[in-house]
Amino acid sequence: MNAPNANEVQTPYVLRSDRDGVVTLTLNRGDRLNPLSTAMLAALQAALDGVAADPGVRVVVLAGAGKHFCAGHDLREMRSHPDKAWQSALFDQCGRVMMSLVRLPQPVVARVQGVAVAAGCQLVSMCDLAVATADARFALPGINNGIFCTTPGVGVSRSVARKHALEMLFTGDLVDAATAERWGLVNRVVPADGLDRAVDALARRIAGHSPAVIAMGKRLFYEQVEKPLAEAYAVAGEGMACNMMLEDAAEGIDAFLAKRPPSWRGR
Image (cartoon, rainbow, N blue to C red):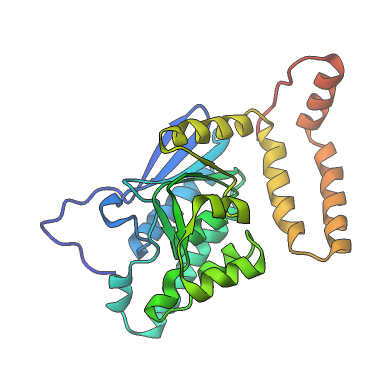
């Protein structure tokens, strides 16, 4: 990683704010479109590790400071390290962050404005849910710079149909928010002035459910979704049986039968 400029004021790469069980992690290099530099990735990894170990967190919102969500990797930093070992370490580091999003016990909602391109688009695809402004744009533009967006394609190809993913990879063209929603890259598109309200409503809807059941359900979803059908049902069936052993499952059923709100016990 390059040494910081002595005249540059250093601020945290990732900001964390907590409110009623919802944690917002904000990529904090808005003046540079929040690039996923090695420093940014390290800060995001540390923040995700902290959230994973915090039983008070129900939902995570991933946001970008400034006008844009994330412009992907820091190309200037990448060009300053021409050796393959450094490049491999970068992509390993990025892969660990992406997998941490999936392995996090809490659901992760991407809050997207402006552009989310290359590894920034990958970041959106690896979040469990995504809400975008109507003027948001998405792309896998590496092909325009002589780089095929292979690692971003891993997440995107698991969110959209294969032909849509390949169109993004082969052309590098920007995709508008309405198209991203239609293709399945984002869950919903809202006006810019309604972004925070929509993200908050979705996060709080999820946070109202049992955190133990949510954590188990998320883990089982990702475990089964890549498996052949018979194996998926085996995993899911065993998971449902384990779910029924949870204290919150008994509480939820008893509350339903008694026509009262459930009182969740926690993670």
